[in-house]
Amino acid sequence: MDQKLYVFDTTLRDGEQVPGCQLNTIEKIELAKMLESMKVDIIECGFPVSSPGDFKSIVEISKIVTESTICALTRAVEKDIDVAADALHFARRPRIHTGIGTSDYHIRYKFNSNREDILRRAVAAVKYARKYVDDVEFYAEDAGRTENEYLARVIEAVIDAGATVVNIPDTTGYCLPAEYGAKIRYLVDNVPNIDKAVISTHCHNDLGMATANTISGVLNGARQVEVTINGVGERAGNTAMEEVVMAVKCRKDIPVYTDIVTKMFNKASHSVSTLMRMPVQPNKAIVGRNAFAHSSGIHQDGVLKNRESYEIIDPMDVGVNDSTIELTARSGRAALKHHFQRLGIEMSKEELDASYQKFLQLADVKKEINDSDLLMLAGVTQDKIAQKIRLKYLQVVCGKNSVPMATVKLVIDGEECTATSGGNGPIDAAFQAVRSLVHRKITLEEFLVQAITRGTDDVGKVHIQIENKGNIYYGFSANTDIVTASVEAYVNAISKII
Ligand code: KIV
Ligand code: ZN
Image 1: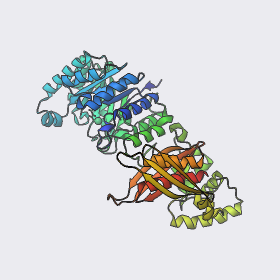
Image 2: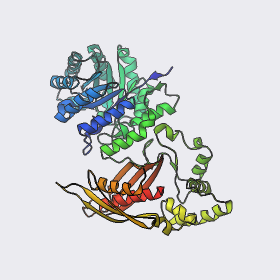
Image 3: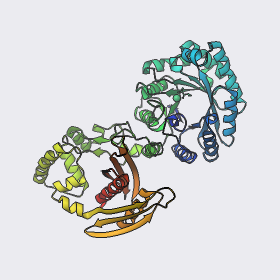
Image 4: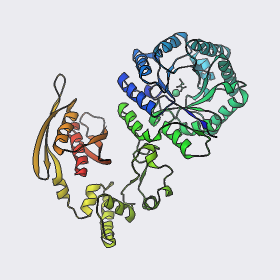
């Protein structure tokens, strides 16, 4: 029988330490509620002694989240533990996560101390935390570079002192998978009271090994994994939750299961990326835009015949509606036919052959073939498409102390129509005006603005994804005026529905 693997999310603590990614209390509550509905077992919400903001977030999350355990980080310092206990006052399932550096680097250079003193401080911190809560996790910071024999002594002592979970962080992301797995195995085999605690992994990604190290830890006896959504975190980040959970789900030879609702991964990834203002790389495993996009002809043909030829995960399992068959110069007839059918265009074999030759010529000069290109190839002229809907005029009023307003003029099927709306900013106001003119239920799924260079005169590229009747439509525009680029991208996406 597979054993349960506890999922400990630290997006709101280790993940949030990234410069520029800080979250306010409202945003933290939103993410904590989402993590709870994903059935994350433990949510680490912050380091309460570090700032009043972190303290307040833990208090508020503790009042709202009741199913997941709420965890607060401390150093092995009484004041930190007092503040953490205070912040966790309302938590239904509180956990204090305390610890100290155990590698010789930390002992000598950070603490100017010695092994015996560090061991004593570790034990004292755990005993002190146990006065407040029953659930105390101990972390041996830089365990990845801590000598195993000493690490085992510390772990035995903190379990005796009352630690219920022992965290073995590879703080610097230095370990290789076999080495990290052997470290966990060493603790399983050499700590006499190890059965009284759960061993946790906490791997950083400096050498790109975080997921591999975590899985290696699990294969060697760890039963809790510390992870973040999208792998966000300091430097190269933490271990990505979606990667570990899907590896466990896919690989029957990893003898554990998690309770995570994997269908929420795609949505969770978008929320974290948006709130932390951190785009996800397109080729990111599980949640990247290209994670289920096939572009070579051989792969496309294989996937269209049977998905499992080239896919180990059903995209639906992670909340992605379908695999994407990309159209590039390497695509075959099967992919082209698939896209024509998606647009409602049926073709005879001869017509498809003729379109395919035109398609190859176009794909050689254009990196990405979009729906308007396909319609053009199928005989609908670009003019007709452009006439369907276009932005003719846009004026916005915004700035400090003024109410944002936008006036938008669209040309829809040759007819001009105008609307004015307010909003919580110029883009929101303009989008509302556009929606009032197109009379369709449109949900904004993704909105990404990127600068090409770094100057204030830069061109802003805007990528948008909208949802209408369960279908996703993509829009793009670039302009030195990012409000105009945003509205153009929005209209571009809507034109695909119309
Ligand atoms: O990476 C690390 O060692 C940590 C600990 C504070 C748990 O984040
Ligand atoms: Zn960490």
